[in-house]
Amino acid sequence: MLIVQKFGGSSVADAAKIMRVAGIIADTFCEGNDTVVILSAQGDTTDDLLEKAAEINPHPSKRELDVLLSTGEQISVALMSMALEKMGLPVVSLTGWQVQISTNFDYGNARIRSVSTERIRQELDKRRIVIITGFQGVNGMGDITTLGRGGSDTSAVAVAAALHADKCQIFTDVEGVFTADPRKVQGARKLDEITYDEMMELASLGAQVLHNRSVEMAKRYGVNLEVLSSYERKPGTKVKEVVKNVEQMKISGIAKDTNVARIAVVGVPDEPGVAFRLFRELASAKINVDVILQSIDRNGTNDISFTVSETDYDKAMEIVQERKDTLRYKELFGDKKVAKVSIVGAGMLSSSGVAATMFEALSEAKINIQMISTSEIKVSVLIDETSADRAVQVIHNKFFN
Ligand code: ADP
Ligand code: ASP
Ligand code: MG
Image (cartoon, rainbow, N blue to C red; front, top):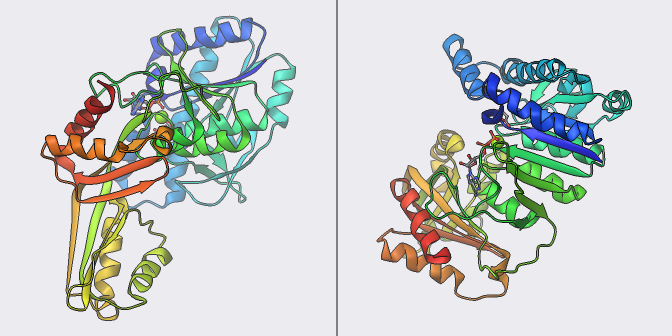
């Protein structure tokens, strides 16, 4: 079999952990598998590099930041290869540009365009274990690009898809995908299986266990994906197209996102074109708007509230302020201390009252809902950030106890 294994930052944080992971890789290889490994930077290396950059220049160019951030993964692959060499195994480390993981030009958040399999195949043909840097690629100019925080998962899935790997295993510091973050929520349960669609929603709505683009890509190319523990050798969570829903669970999980801010444009004229002008300006600045709420007409005016990521908040506020004359609103309010809590589950399609159950849990806990948004398989609410952890816990208790 051809197996792609990815190990996250905490799994390779120090020498002892590297040796343990080397053991997992060695076993996979010695069982006769073609073994390709993707690694993240050790522990908090990426954050430390960001701090180092900020000490020198608080606003470095994204290009230079990528040159810096990509070094974390290069350290990991070299050390892991040395560990395997010490065990007497044939191994080679490769960076994203050596492999030719081609991306677009979006430094800091690049998207993978293609993965060349030539070099990897050559090395596998020589019966070597191939260890590749996650989180990075090379653009059309030959510059190093990075894929966004948590992007090593996407590197792994892209390599697995390109090689038509039999399996792509994402090893991390928890046993798999849980009904909620197992480090924060009491009683969180491990899922044996989850669909690509549900996992994609959970990842996009704040469950950091998988990079959302990795799930999108796994679905597109039908990659056989599993999330499992690098500490305990037992089955994890399979992410796939169809699952057998033995338990008939109404929801599969709950996610929290605190990188959210709310903007309220109050007292805009109630006439055609107002929402269009507002959101066109934000779109042309590449600001993603998420939840939108428009009030009903009150004496010829209404209010439009919407959310953006906290990262885009200052820019969005500036744009709306600058357009006060054309948008003709009375007041503008912004709030960064909000969080989005979401429930996700394909079971919602067939059972009614799922949203009501979520609202009931929040009502009993006296947590006020500011905004609501729904889709086929998710319900999200916007609430005060300080209540977010409690909200996730009470909703979890309601659905899973
Ligand atoms: P890695 O360094 O291996 O990429 P991450 O920190 O990116 O690991 O992701 C694993 C973490 O995701 C876990 O430690 C856990 O706290 C968090 N997490 C959040 N939501 C979930 C969930 N639903 N299931 C499992 N883990 C979750
Ligand atoms: N090292 C990178 C990060 O911390 C990529 C990853 O871990 O997936 O975001
Ligand atoms: Mg991660």
